[in-house]
Image (spheres, rainbow, N blue to C red):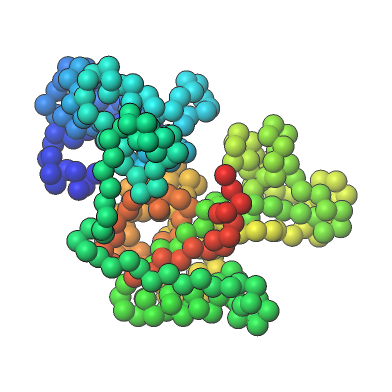
Amino acid sequence: MSRLQRYFGDKIGVYHSKYSVNERVEVWNNVLHNSQKMKVILGVRSAVFLPFSDLGLIIVDEEHDASFRQIDPAPRFQARDTATILAKLHQCQLLLGSATPSIESLHNVANQKYGYVSLNQRYASFQPPEIVLVDMKDKLRRKRIKGHFSDDLIQEIEQTLSKGKQVLLFQNRRGYAPVIQCKSCGTIPQCPNCDVSLTYHQGRNQLRCHYCGYAIAKSEICIACSSTDLITKGVGTEQIAQELLSLFPKITIDRMDQDTTQGKYGFQKILSDFEQQQTQILVGTQMITKGLDFSNVGLVGVINADMLNTRP
């Protein structure tokens, strides 16, 4: 947003669900009357339904992303495909941007429905980063793990911070742990609506379903056998942030996921603090992988990377 404002000044408008009804009505009316205040609209998927009258260009960034598909609540639609129809109705240009294009878009390119432009080198000839894979099974066997961090990652974080650089840590599960299980009978609390395990959120002391929002208070005893021998399995961003605080107590650590960005300016504040280097380590879900650009980041860590291969 700030980068676009530097180029377009006060001609840019923003449209998303965190805005109040009055704010969204104001944006709607400005677009309807083709106001000079809103020549550029930066919006989420619902922005495709604004009443455009003189549309010249639509840009869909990260067009492959699954979040463009709205399933619940209604209306159910694919915002990228809706933008394609919108461009056809207004006879304007459509630009789909992605480093990993969707199969549908590649198919349309192959059938010559879409044009194709490829970037064959990195911007400003930047060198690709060094990628290091850490065998966690080997580290566990050699007892070189603290919490969920290998000794290699801890060392790299220490060296990065000592140089005055910042660290991004990616863990694509929010909450404290995805599963709570009874050691006595093996029972795992399930969502009655979705039939999936409830995620433990320690800050709220709740078990929550990340699909329908169902939530209950965490019980200290098993719901099946009343045993008090409960354990957590797996790790979420909340647990990663806590472990970091114990490893680096003097470092400012922040967390970005759906739980910490509930407020209207929650997302913007977290990013602003990190950009202004008030935060040294930022832990987050896929929110921190969405095309963000921070000049002072010296290290990016992916926690439990194998898990990403098991999810659709």
